[in-house]
Image (cartoon, rainbow, N blue to C red):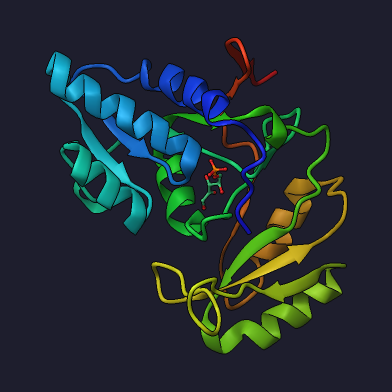
Length: 231
Ligand SMILES: O=C(CO)[C@H](O)[C@H](O)COP(=O)(O)O
């Protein structure tokens, strides 16, 4: 369920601008996806070329591999007391800076790291912006709970689909060993209420609604970066 509507240049501008926020000595949440990867590479360049002293906290297996290859010193979340800034992508972000994440099935760890950050910056391209969230919401479920969670999602007005793997027969299995239901709700008029209902569903490990979490959204455009702030 990857969304790749923007151009690489738009994503790069957003990611590189956000990477400029990282200061010496910072602990940085490293998000997942193609836009966050531009931030990871820019941070790595600053480490190598300017001697920037950082610790990266990766949000997924894929990001840990990328950060390792690029030479960013890493820590896992349970090794750090605070995250100074987290930089992460999104599948969709609304005017109130609420987001849908999980196109890479990494939203459970992303939410933990992004929520722990003093400052959480979403990096996106213009194709991700919308007045109202209306993309499918990824819901990570314990494998045994997929049927009961799917039933609850239908009660909530959703239409869930088990996410299939692309180069393997069968479902996507997350970094945590769980499955993902992508759930269409149409236009989500009250994301906070839906988020609360999803969080209260037994067997739902985590859902991809990030409500009231982002401090800023950096939208990379064809000629710069539009910075959206809360309020
Ligand atoms: O939530 C995510 C992964 O779980 C990603 O941040 C989201 O899918 C955006 O990815 P991209 O920048 O490649 O469009």
